[in-house]
Length: 226
Image (cartoon, rainbow, N blue to C red; front, side, top):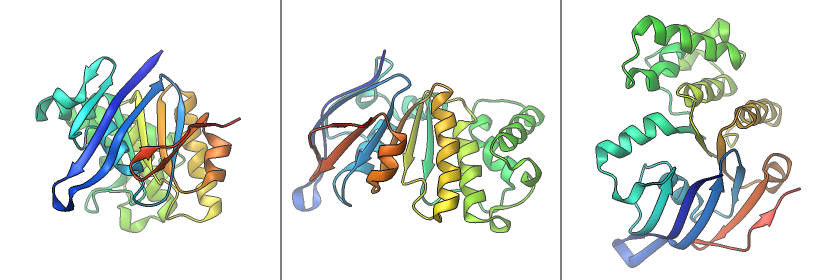
């Protein structure tokens, strides 16, 4: 079953007439793991931001579960991000003043879930990523790998149908990267469709079911990954 349908997506910036995306069309199936490969500036992160409703296309359409993101209001996009999408970034994007459990619980705040229920759910999610004993530690008290695991727990807290990962292992050593990818694989096996931006062809080969190569804001010939 198709989850995402993007047709002729353009993202242009008026300054200098730059097109970060130039006519991208792609389908993503429910439960699929897609890797986006390409050099810096190829349009990978721009496409990811459009899929996540963090940015709007200049023209073209992008529908998720039949809803066109390009025509949504700011409020509707916010609801879409809260209910449908989970984000994992290279830079973690944790709130430094909050303990791990409160970072994980943030998506649940916007759903109106009571504090104690949020805390229980967040601690359970942290336990799933191996940080059950670190729930009251702040990001500054954790290693990079631990912070990324907190970010993964936060991304999964609202049980997203679409998980978007932008270089999730880019700041991590090889051993920690393997641990993080194992957690991402688990999220994918639980049923989420997953789109991951990476510069690493080997990472894509091992984990993704399909690789899409991008260059100059366009999709090159898709490459199936065995």
